[in-house]
Length: 509
Image (tube, rainbow, N blue to C red; front, side, top):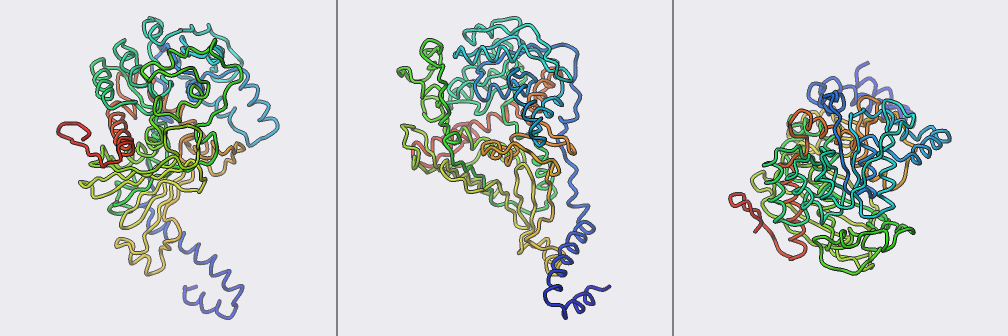
């Protein structure tokens, strides 16, 4: 039947006709989009590291520095997990078939690495990490026990060991730059959690040390392993949304944990924490369990919202759009909700200007509101919502899609392209924190229906780079851009002024 005949026949059936017409219109639009836009919108890009074979027969000996929340997750991504968590996951799987964490862990690639060293200044965490490091998963899980890693009291003792080829750094922010420099000079390959540095001066020293010593360096922005970002990059390069003029990146949380008010371990005390080592390059302060466990709340050890959370959003946009360091940055915000003695803001607004690219990036964050917001790339012809999923919409005033919109082939309220990886796989893990990270593509990537930890893929990328003498996805050049950009945001906030980047002098002014 012709379209006009369908509409004419429906005119005499107001209620049923309206329902049928809604169904007909949606399917007509979907059908026509599939047929008329298939070549343009069927993005082929996917993360190549998912299927990449682990190269080389030589086992790489890895040491880990810092085994708190993130350090433990990195060990898991590398293939090492505490026996108690294995039993917990097994039990959960028996009672909740939608909890896939155990199966996901079993399906991780064997990276052929050993944890030969653990360094943590809190004895309880160090002992747990040693037990995890001796607990190996090799293509199945039968609690194969390896030789226990050596406990190093200081990270410099670890770096001096001939039994360490590479290190994972998951210490507080104020130690990142110092540890990277020392590790590079010792000839150890480095995986370091974001942000790359705590201060501007050490940023240049980190770059120098990494490049002069030819190590494989990976910065911990695991969202670079998410399929959605590869497809978003292809969509941008194909001109699907036209000329980009505005990017919006957001962070919204509304819980003590989300605001870095982490639980204080009841077993912790002055006797089992090396407080002097914790302080390191930071200002002197008396022993404080609150500062030790919740260090992100103070400038003395932290890089605040700009270094901790904005860097993930910035790196994602840099990956997709190749932004580089902005021309200028302004910031505002304050401590508006968490009156707990912290010095870093819980609300931050930062604007990055890229006049040479004719666009702005706006970052907005609140740690006391859970309003669902995301990452949006806006162009003249459309916009992309980018996270764990990807949705591309046409702009109703688009030039490119003007005729299709006019002729009813495109409805601006319906995505012209949608990528929802693993949508058939219901996830039974629904904590607010995990939902937050999953929505931003920071937990999992997919190949078909197979769910893979992005942290595992990011470490795999680094291990392959070590074996092939190459640089991984988030190497030192991307790290430099991330660090300088985050520092510009922090300086703008703390000094309440507009800051600029001088590309010729390579300086913040």
